[in-house]
Image (cartoon, rainbow, N blue to C red; front, side, top):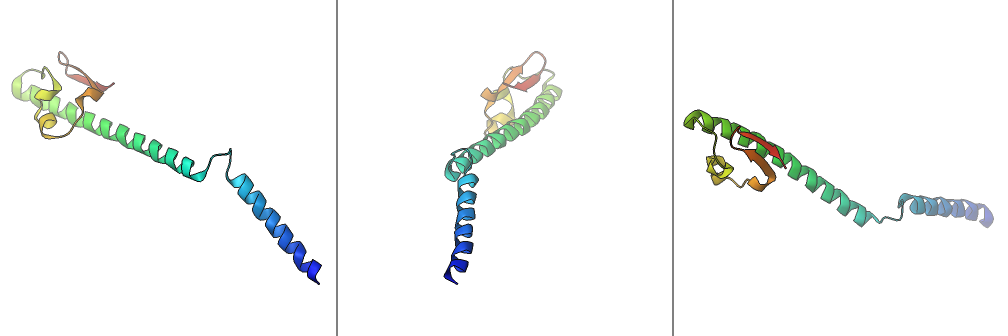
Length: 103
């Protein structure tokens, strides 16, 4: 009777061992994997923010042109940049055309 109970326990332990051994995958621990995912997500957020800021800058450049008849010589001339925290070093700006793009 005892051997009938040992077999299912042994099989269950073996399956649990396989699950744990195969579940870790490529020798990477879960904490490291989580950290890498957090860093990837942070990078995606920064890219999306930079793109949103670029759209706001494009609008501000056009508004500046309408009000002043010329494009700003530098992005720092824009009230948007002076009033908000926008890192203008992320953008390549051509004052002759008013074109802006991410570096």
